[in-house]
Image (cartoon, rainbow, N blue to C red; front, top):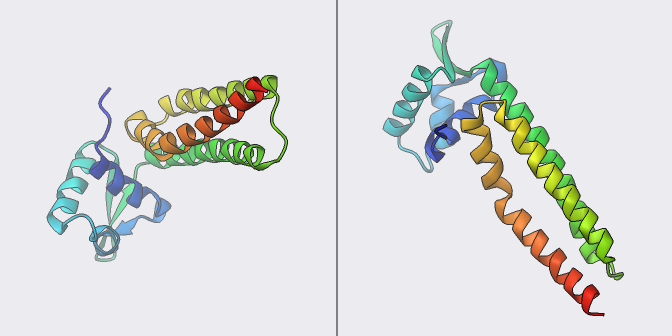
Length: 162
């Protein structure tokens, strides 16, 4: 399976976030022009269109770009998985900010729960346009997960040494 590169994902996510109403080319240029040229945006939309990720609709003289139904559903699934992971990471951060040191079995249970959330997230996203969702999911929380787990494990080491 080939994943979409960052430029394609950025344009596709920008289109998908507009929902079933789509987005005009002018809106895309305004949104994406700080980091992509007009020619790049047009070329990326062309690639996405021929890959059937984007639909083109003419609406009373205006051309609108709409993410396919599969892409929109994948974005919903991705947001749900991000939400689950964010809630878990927030619970870890709150645990680390308390004065009480967590017990080793609590840490073990939390790590197991976190791994379960991440793995079920990946499994769910594999069924929903994985060439878009898997890299987006991985990029978004890669650093957050490692930072949170490192701080939790540091607290756990101090508990084990006590």
